[in-house]
Image (tube, rainbow, N blue to C red):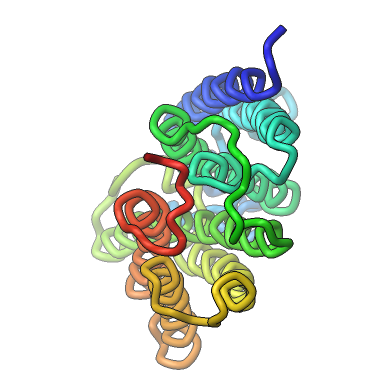
Length: 329
């Protein structure tokens, strides 16, 4: 009979495979959106919702014409629904993997780089699915599912370590609080990042349309919200994520005092966590007080998330310090 860690590995790779299926379904959804006609996009109901105008310069988040129209005349979203269903199924396998890893270890499953990747991607997909219950962001499905497949697959293939006892500094309640909150903020930053990428694409399309150029960029952009709506959503997700990241810094300092007898020591991990905080603080401040809206705002958001990924994939692996708990030899 396989042990719990073996079950965790099996269910994790199953989750990756199902997420890959979700990515493919969402990609087909974008392709179907690209084939939507202007009439499909610019219906009066959509214009009233603040979406597409007669020239297709944006659309509501519902993503019209992703799967054609049914007998009722209402748009269907067949591939988007399949992608979301597969994302939910993959998330359940993912959650099972995390739980069995935790039971196998007898602790929370985020004490090394492999486990942190498992939990971080679990929260990225989980936050995305929760947000879907309030806002239709299925046009981000390819970004989110693709990001999760890459990060989780890379972690499973390269960062896996067997269950080991905790080192002394990690034997603290702050392990539960600090790492979980950091993972949650990363999930919110990931959504903001995806929205900012879409914002840049939509901004270019709207600018070229204003210049009289038709059929600019991928066709699915006609079914997305306009630039202002995408930017506002990215900003709101970033603000909430920034609050959690600020708490991450504070909790980390308290934990450092408890473990090493000092609140701050400019360890490489501490420094990069602070750099990320500064980048997002600058983004929020610049947008709120300096009028850095539009493309500059989007690029700041993308830069911030790039720093988050660098902190996870590079700092954790190649830089040594007091936070070197990757578990890799």
